[in-house]
Length: 225
Image (tube, rainbow, N blue to C red; front, top):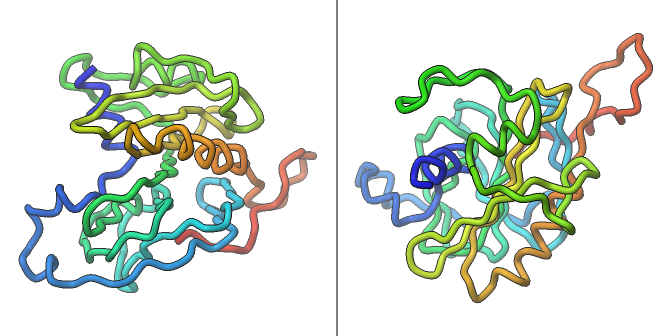
């Protein structure tokens, strides 16, 4: 379970201030306010689009940021401050203190090397993907990804923190998607409803016109953020 937790944390982002202590002192002194999340998120690189529920916020990437596009983080309550980071992944959004959040994380479905299991090939199905990160995953009766019951994993973290992760492959298994809620035991029931709204509003989209007929809508002109 520890290995699964580390893998999920790596994929789902790491942005709480308790992990900020190892950063440079200069970075620690720089903060900026969060912004209301735009209503549309669209990744032309990964063919993914999301209609964002109202009332959520995000920490904008620095203008000079030149890292790897892997998703975004939605905060269910505005954090007191966003912290400057030189992290490579777009899912690393450091904040002051703790507020509940939802991380939308995607990447190409490629093999990887594990120090315990050796070479692990790409997941052919969502079930294979879920099994890699959570041996005790289940199929949710109410949470959905791509109009299908989502494969889910619930993890108890330190203190009163809880993480719920939804996992799926998409684009003919060429890409993977993880949607991760990080919250407290006290808030988990209400925040899970927001997770359901976010997850059900994520769709695959067509990046460019093709000769073959596709049921996918074209990706929105909106950008990643």
